[in-house]
Length: 212
Image (cartoon, rainbow, N blue to C red):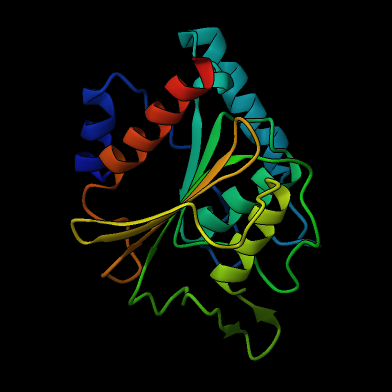
């Protein structure tokens, strides 16, 4: 919520921003419980409770909500989308994918908007080892391949490739009501400038298409 430019961009277009906290770990840092085998809070259940509370108090529906997350939150978004694809209308991870070994398959197709920095050294596009070799961040492109498989894409090649300012974008139109978009930006491990507006343009355009 301290990213006021991002929050203001959402609010200006009529969206509420809900920012739930990850849990506190033994080392004092906060982290989402996304990695298979980790003990802790059931994040899918927790986020359903958050949405139920928002629905009761403000009339917010998960059918109109994008679940987004940055870094560890981006990993969490991918894993939740993979296991519970119908919990939210769309998913928008930033600088986070899957860990190795990544899931062999996901429960169902989704709408996904993945953004990543070309110079990201915290979560490199090709992945990296952490904790010696205890943990292995996965290859972002391998994660996109899993999503193409899940969404029933007929080809690995994108349906559209274009440049939008500093962003290099690729898009796959697959099964009805699903799509994958990948936005590569020149920076490092960060939420890039203009991300909120770009993501909302994507979300609203597809929502209008799906309802027509």
